[in-house]
Image (cartoon, rainbow, N blue to C red; front, top):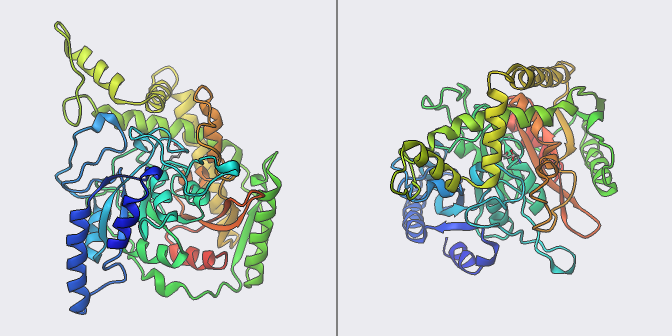
Length: 455
Ligand code: GLN
């Protein structure tokens, strides 16, 4: 814990931690020490971790990197963080992210961008990815041994790929959403970001639970994931979906994908060409459903119940109070999502957009069900269409360019499936690249075991 606190103090330029809790960390580390001495430790006891700012931690500012939650200090604890503290993990602080987890570069944060510890050609600063950019940067720079992330459309896996770390998004319902500030409730899921697959197995085991406080928490027992890491994947059937071979895929990504398939084959898995025919509709469906749910979830930020209220002028009424609070409190990307979301949910367009997107979602889920019925255990794809790119590259006037970042990651969120990104190689500039394995529902143990073969 002391070593991590020192690293954090020296790594201000990465802007990964946005709120340090050193006193809390030292106190928790002392308690963990006593617990270890008394012989009552878990594998997480004494392990210093960082927490994405989207998790409510009692007594610690929790803002989801939004100005609208300025001054909000929760009086209760998210189930995930409570589970981690119960296992003996040590809280180092809150980590940077895109506001309300909307984004792929960590540039949409009220704290300013986080920076990737990897540097580009001529030393240019790169994005650590998003929205869990601070978590990924902190793990990659050894500021903590693990971090929590959330993944609605790729926010754990894409930053993991951009920083050479491991990121696991569990099956929807595996990890409680209680106390996690909502983005899109039917897609959100928290998971671990770590340096190794084994660490991810240990941390997931501590984070996951069956939680009556989250009605979508699944009543499935949490196995000891670490004990499932046998390294034996002989006879497993790994699908390579042809629809993911998108036009213009860079050569190094295509080569990495082949290399990953080779590694799995060498470990005894059977590599099978498969088809997921509705893949190309996933991104447009996601960018209807996620903003629709976001617009509904964000309606609660009205200047009354939480956080900040805009300064009012003489004569302003309640409508002006709402308008000014929301106009000043939400950043441009969040405002864009609210506008898209309210539009697709409006009476005149509901059928054309929201309902159609829901139907597409059902078809995407069916594609995966068909693959599983054909005996496919996991599906291998690239995590991202490129390596990390320089900060400032994404033109704010062209948000669709950023949305295209999520082309390989959103499908499994729509289907509720688990996925992991593992660092497998490098691009021509030496920057890390990741591959994604998509698993069967609630089979995170198998998924982690297959991911071992890619390490
Ligand atoms: N980049 C995607 C978005 O902005 C995914 C974000 C996430 O998974 N939280 O919606």
